[in-house]
Length: 512
Image 1 (tube, helix red, strand yellow):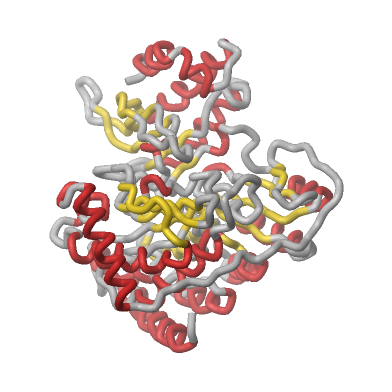
Image 2 (cartoon, helix red, strand yellow):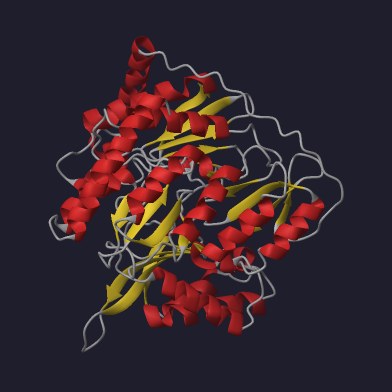
C-alpha cells in the first residue's frame, strides 16, 4: 500500500483504539461495536472482555518476515493461542483492548493489514496454498491474489457493499479454496487465462457459482473485480442482511441476467479505468538433492524440493509452536509458510534434509486424514456460535484414536458451530452444522445436523445432502461406527461409502 493509505490507516487505528476502550467501559453496545470492529478485522469474543484479531494474509502467504513478527507478538503480548482460518488468515485470540490496536500497528511493516478483515468488506483473498510449487498447475496465481488484495484495500473506504465479498484464485489443480462457490472464483487455465465463477457461496441459501467467463485474460482480473463490486452495489440487498450476499442475486436477477449485468459492468470498468495488470510469478531458484518418503512431505514441481504439511488439530496453533517454527525456519534459506483453507500450514521450498527437520518439529500435528478435519472456532469463543465445534472435534479425534480406526477409513469432516458454514460443512464428505434437537419429554439438547456426500473437487464440486440430526454427545460414536464399518470392509471411506451407501445410511439412521 502507498504511504498515504498507510498514514490514513494508522490514524484509523488510533480512532479504533478509542472505540475498543469505550466498548470495554460499557459505553458502546455489543451489536454497535461489532459493526465498527469488523472493519478492522477484530471482534469481541463471547466473553466480551476478550478480543480476536484477524491477520490478513493474501493468498495465505506467511513470509519469513510475517512469521517472525507473529512469533515476536505472541511472546510480547502473551497471546494464549492462534487459529488458522478457512479463509487462509490467522487469528489471535483472547487479546485485551490495549493489545488489539498495538498489534495492528506493529503488523504494518511486514505487510499485514487487518483493515477489512471482517464486516461488509472484501475479505482475505485466497489462493491455492501450494501455488507456485505444485506439480501440474496451470500457473502460479499468487501474484494475482496479491494484486487483487492491493486493489481492494485501496478502494475499501470508498465502497459500501451490502455484505462481505470473498474472492479466491485456484491454480488449476486443487480447488480447496472453493472457487466453484465463492463470490468470485478465478480458476487458472493452461493457456494463461482464468475461468471465472461468480455469486456462489455457503451458509444460508448456499449456491454454486455462475460461470461468467471461460477464458478471462489474466491482465484484466481487476476489471472483473470492479465489475462485481458495481453489480453487487447495484443489485445486492441492503434491507435484509440474511439475503444480502452475492449468491442471492441469482434469485433476484436470475443467473443469465446476473451474468449479463455483470459483464456490462466489466465493460464499463474497462472503458472508465486503467486497471491492467502486468504480472510475472517469481522464479524459485533454490535447488535440492536427496529424496524423502513421508506422507506429510510433498514433492514440489521444483526438482529436489519439498513442502511439509502441518495440521494442528482443529487449526489451533499454540504460540510455542509458532516460536519454534520461526527459530527453525530462520535458518532455512528460501522457505516460507502457506495457510490452507483446511487449516493446514504448509512449509515450502525445503530440501530433503530441511524437510526432515521440519517434519520432526511438527510431529505433534494430525497423523491421519480424519485428524485433518476442519472446525470453526466454536460457540465457546464466537458470539454467533450455537455449538462448540472445537470441543466436539477434540472428543471425536480421541474416540477414533481409542477405537484404533485405520487411516483412510474416515474422511476429513467439517464441523460448523452454526449455519454460517465457516468450516465448509455443506461441501464436505461428512459435514456437521450446530443446532438443537428435541428430546422426547424434555428440553431440546445440543446437536448437529448431518450433511453427507459433498465435494470440493475441481470440476466436480457439489453440495452434500442434509440427512438428519445427531445429538452432540453421540457424534463421536457415530463416526467411530462408520469408520469401523469401512475398515471391516477392507476399504477406505471414499470407496466404501460409494459402493455401499445403504450401509452408510443404516448406521446413520441409528443416530438421527
